[in-house]
Length: 180
Image 1 (cartoon, rainbow, N blue to C red):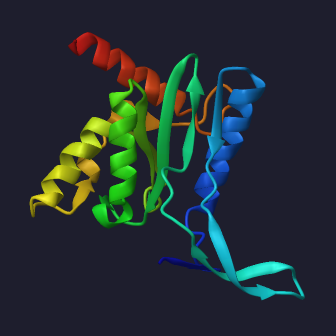
Image 2 (image 1 turned 135 degrees about the vertical axis):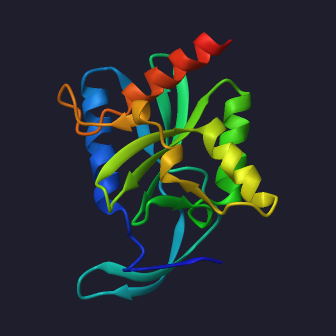
């Protein structure tokens, strides 16, 4: 059983950026994306401050976010790395399984990745992630190298969106349509 403590909120600023973006998407009626809470059971409470200081995860969650964009179902996870690669240890088998099944239902699965060392954000399509995941499962490379993140999927703030990741989805869907 996994445990959470006060050091367990890595990437919070990144998720705050995504949540602010999702609020703007919702306000503009462009998309509805919700953060999926991770179910936890508190073990220790700081009664003086009314805070949970130690808890365990009740069960494995799916992904960080799920929703719909103009009639397209989407799910994704947010990952942050301080290296010039995305370690596979940051991705869990149950997340891969969920995203793969989501794709089979014609949804769009992906990761949003923040390279903290470069302060760059990327959209990583599920098929690219799956390629590296499968390679790692066969004993190969245990990370997605920075060079695998295509510049066309680099994300920026734009049009009042703190991190306009819908641009990544649009680029991916256009590429997918052109390759069919």
